[in-house]
Image (cartoon, rainbow, N blue to C red; front, side, top):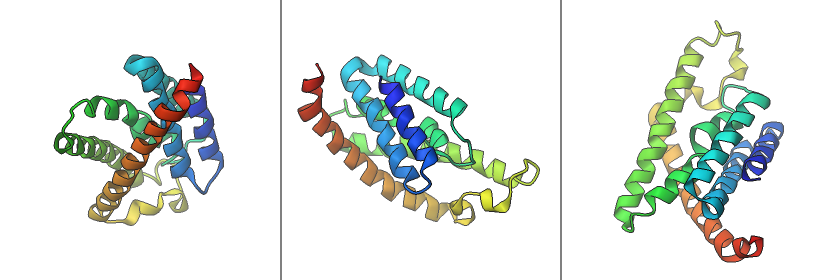
Length: 170
């Protein structure tokens, strides 16, 4: 159920050109719910199934909801759950930002390699992501600020799910 709900939101993100990033982020809520309801192993399975379905069945432009979900948004709620077992926030935040920056770096190098060969791969210049011309410093700074808001919002939504929704599902 969690995989299929995440996939539905990834489908909506792929079909809806505005709001792709936000809808992709919403799809991660279903993986967070899986962590709460069925544990880390079940959540990992839900993430892998949703990622595989999205990568196989949805449109696949260079930076797309399936790629963003597979590289970061899908796995982050699982990682967040593990990181937040450390009770000290001074330990949690650096680990969270390290995880996000590692994911961003992997995605950045993958996309940079494709952009460098985009004409060989048959991609047109207008199919490149808008951030392709940005300085890496600006890109990383913007992503780190956005990540801080995403993590805070995800924490509040997880709290809401646990306190208001989860008990009605059981």
